[in-house]
Image 1 (cartoon, helix red, strand yellow):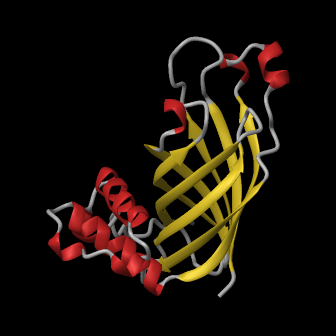
Image 2: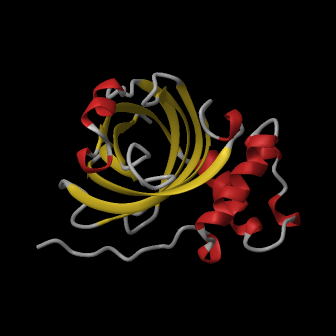
Length: 202
């Protein structure tokens, strides 16, 4: 029987996802992660910043391997789906820390081909909680707070997003998926499942 692991929360003092986005913005503007002076920031930004820097400094390194975008048929016309790119190839780097209960905190940089075959750049934080013994295949749920840059949204300016993540983890390998909701309503705007993997190397 699967056993629910206690959730450690998304960051120190329960820093929310938008706090993590603010922390990511600060780290992105700094030359290196260690340069962020988190203790001078207001709460919850200081908590989120501390979590990000700690994860980067003390995490294990790995790679992200994006692979597939599934455009849900009930929100896209058949003609439009046939034109969209499904093979979201790319590569990313990730740093991950693991709590005693097996929950994880990660910071990552990722680039992949979006639905229009353009490069989509991502700088993000991910929190995930898992069920079951660590030595078995574990289902997990979490979220990512991410800064996204792609040429077809906001004139190419980076923008923040918070997305859910569902995962299956076996030891140091994880298969994950997130759902990108409809952005503007109506047909042919969003509702895409994005599938990617990760391997922690050291």
